[in-house]
Amino acid sequence: MQCQQKLSGSLSCLNNYVTTVSCMWVTEKPVGDGPFHLHFTNLWSKGHNASCKLTATESMQNQYHCTIHLASQILETDGYRVSLQGNFFGHNHTHMTFPEYNPRMHIKLDPPLNIQSNATASKCQIWWSVWNVPWYLAEILQYELQYKEYSMSWEVALNKTLPSSLPQVEIEATELRSGIAYAARVRCKVSENENSYHSQWSEWSQTTVFQRTDVPKVSEKILNTKIMQYLFIPLSFGTLLYLFWTCKLSSRAKSLTCFNIPTPAAFFQPLYSLHNGNFKEAQMRLLQKKTLHLPQVQASGMSPAGT
Image (tube, rainbow, N blue to C red; front, side):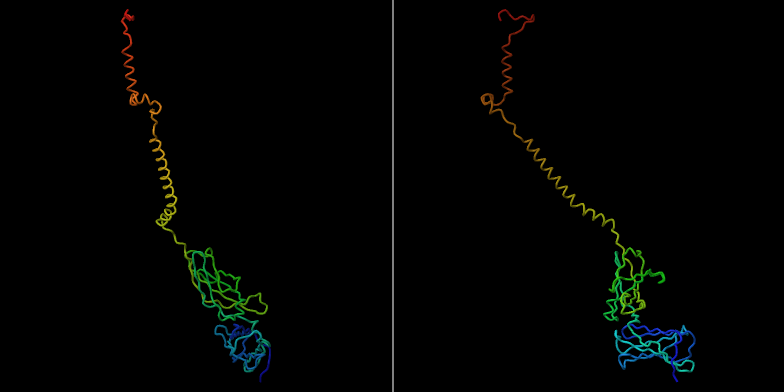
């Protein structure tokens, strides 16, 4: 005989909004050896029912879990009646756990896949994929990034809630220590701004490891070469300018030293022709003649009577 009564403990069923539903039953007190089953009855489509057997968790005696794989992908209009049936200390009981289970209000997506990274000296780019999420949900997803130094525990990791639904993020190099390896992972859920859905965070993705690339130091030889390259043009220009002005001044000096001194022949043509231009010799001959015609002076200072 089966009867319906209040279920001991709590039952939660979360789905990945594709075809998988995972349920957890936590009891408040011992319930017997079972077995226990969950039954999903589709409210709108006959024949699309499913069931699973609840199995006790080894580490927790008061926890049971099961996973259902639906025959078709979950739709926004889907609804199920969920009941738990089992043997409670020798008595069969059926509990109506969800009179109307709406999958879109109990979402827990699969974790992001294929997380990768690329680090440079200025930033680290991280990207991933969510191919197992319906396209209309992918556009309204919210992501959380968690990263830490590789040798540290995740308990001390930094968390960032990303503002965009794009499956990528950049970390500035100023947030990373040089020469230190980092590990990062990401999780997702439907944005809290969407009232049509209710979602929990997915599990964390696999990790990606990266390390900031240091800016290469320029060697002294390369630095000197670059300095010479920068100085070559102004030095060459200065040298050419110096040679130009030197040649110009030299030509001007030469023209000044070679300047023709005017000859007096044009102004004293008769004298020039008479003395063949040697005015100095002509002047000497004139002085000699004047000396010969001067009167002789006596010792007493008087000239001879006949003069």
